[in-house]
Image (cartoon, rainbow, N blue to C red):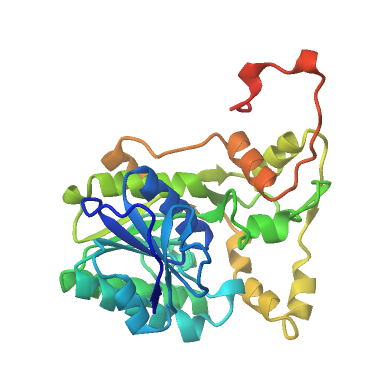
Length: 344
């Protein structure tokens, strides 16, 4: 375990440990916490040359090593468990040990655990509208693991570890590359000419813009004193009611017509025995074949409203981050200062 020197350590600031700070959720939650005045410590596999990355104190360690996680969490009042095996692989061998290590660390230092949830732990008997109390009877391996993860978190809450679970749809957003948006819909680094849509015709799908997910977690933590020991909330995010609305937003962001083609699932099935990623993706096909939507009524009742970035602004920011928007130089006479922030 190697600790790097933190630039501006302040003893009066609360400390949060991010397990999975390089991922989409972890990185955006880290930014949100820093903006709220938290000290943020990131558990990373590789040593950071400068000791500080994007304002976060860097701790070199492995989420699969319990002692590394326990040591990294010393002094923390919050642990954000946002780590997943890359490329959907090795879930059965890694997700539970990593979570157990975060739980052990939280028990050792008295921290709250924040866990980003998903729809994986629900089965068709609970579709199409999911509430926080919907029955959890999944039919996939990942779903069963998600159920077990939440069960272990609930047991930990009964032993005195406060837990906050925020379930949301498929993530997308700036600086997040390991998701359906960036790996299936568009091609990072290339201007958008076409979109590969995994959704079946007219099958609604739920998306979650990562800055909104982070802000939702932040607003819930702002009122942590009012949260139960085991708190679970659903986000609605962006509900693409017919599977075509996100494609439309991509087209508007690109500024020109975009060809849409359906993902050829039979091809994914044929290649699955030889391509591990395709095998894992195929297991999630059901999420694109039927409308599955989470109700945010409980969240809205508690916060008053769910944080929402207009979809065109969210998609534009995401595509720009992925390098998918062509740079068009406007004539000086057509460029107005009021337009600098982009239309919302």
